[in-house]
Each structure stands twice: as C-alpha cells, then as structure tokens.
Image 1 (tube, rainbow, N blue to C red):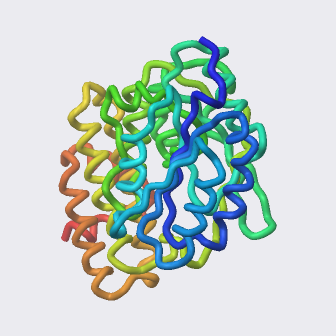
Image 2: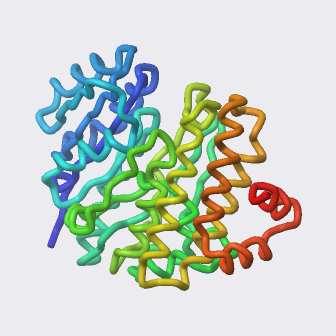
Image 3: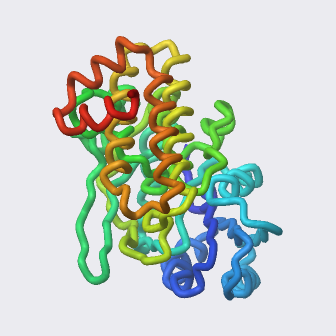
Length: 319
C-alpha cells in the first residue's frame, strides 16, 4: 500500500503556548498543503493560544480545533484528540517544537516501503537557545525493520524504552487502537508507559535515518522546571509501567523496568532542592511505594547493579 501525507493526522495539544505556536504552525504548513490533517487541542490556556489556534484552523480545511473547558494535562488532551483520528497514520508534536519541511513525508515513505509497520521511530534535534544537538534513537540499525522487543534490552545500556518520547516518529492508528494504547492521565511523564507498550506489543518497526524534528529545551515555563505536585506524576507513571511489565508474558524485561525506575527515583531525589517542602515529603513517600511494588528479589538485584551512592539513597527510603 502506498501512503501519502493525506493519510496522516498530527495531534498537537498546547497550554499557554502563544509565543511558540507560530514557529510550530509555520513548519507544518508544507505538509498541510499536501493534505495532512492536524488536530489542535487547547488545554484551557489563559493566554492567546485558543485564538491563535482558531485563526490557524480557519485557514486550513484539514485542521480542526478542540478547546478544553478545564485544564486536563497533555496526556488526556492527546487521548481526546486520538479518539478523533480517522487516518491510517498518526503522530504527535508539542506547541513549542517544530519540524523540517520533508520530515513527515519521509516518515510516511517508510510505511509505504516496508509493509505492516506498527511504528517508525526517528532521531531528533535538541535545541537549547541557538545550540543544536542530534539525539539519535538508541538502536544500532536504521531503515531495517525489526522486532520492537529487540529495542528494550540490554539492561545496562540506554535503549528505546529509556528514551521516553513518542513524538519523534509515526504510528499505525490501527495498532494503537487495537491495543487501546493511550497516554496516562498525568501532567508529566504521561508517555512513559506508552513507550513500553509500544516496544512490547508491536510486531514490526524501524528506526528511520531522519532527525528533522526540533525539540525545544530550557523553557522556564516547562513542567520540567516546576517544583509542585506535578513532579510526583513520575511516581504514578513508574507504578503503571512496572505493573504492565510484571503482568506481561515477558519476565526477561522486568529488570530493565526496575533499573529504569530506580534511576528515575534517584534523578528526582538528586534534585530535591527544586521541590516545595511538602512535595519533598511526598516524593520520598511515593518513591518508597514504588520500591515496595517491585518483588524483593528483583529489587535487591537492581540495588546490587547500581553504584553505592544511589544504592544508599534508595535504601534510606525503605527504612
């Protein structure tokens, strides 16, 4: 089957993105001109985001606008839009990122060239102000179809499940819907379980030698810079992904999920100073709950395989 951009829908949720949406929209226009669809979701913004979205949707017949009455978070906003997708392929972009002119067309070509792909993953370009750096997908081969489970191990190296991004790539809509794959209803870390589901449930994928999607970092309003209760979402996400792996038919992947969970807990404990005092207490309590969810033998193995500093940090949570 030959796919074109008319077979693609891009889902774009945004909250208070008035200063960056213009760049995003401008980058999407070449693909929209070739028939690509776009679903815009305003997550109850308090700035001019809904007006900017409405004006853009009025210019393009394949662009639709979905306003949220209250703030629901990126996960729920994406899920609502996903339920409205009626094209064979879909992908995602955030309101502060942008793409190269041929990026989506090149991803679509992979679905035409390699039948029965469940998803295509690409590299991306990380942007800090004027600085640029290519972040490659953590898999050694490009443009060769493979069993996605091969992108999970080994435990001790960064793999595709450690790169918790869904937007650098494209998906079969039928694949996502068949497995009821949706984002977690969280403000942050909403994609972490979906990335694991993608790798464990798909039958065939590839990594495309493409990188023209630009990921803007270092924005002061980004949720990664906040110190309130939203930072606790990572704990809910870890519980969900651990439960998913433990309930699967693939016990060989559990230690990878354990190591990832231990690393993420340590990451947040190392940045304790950015959290509000009451959130610090909740982070420790929630981190302990995640550790207790892991079978003792697997938790002990995970502790044994990390450095002494982080091991002591985690052992203190269990006291």
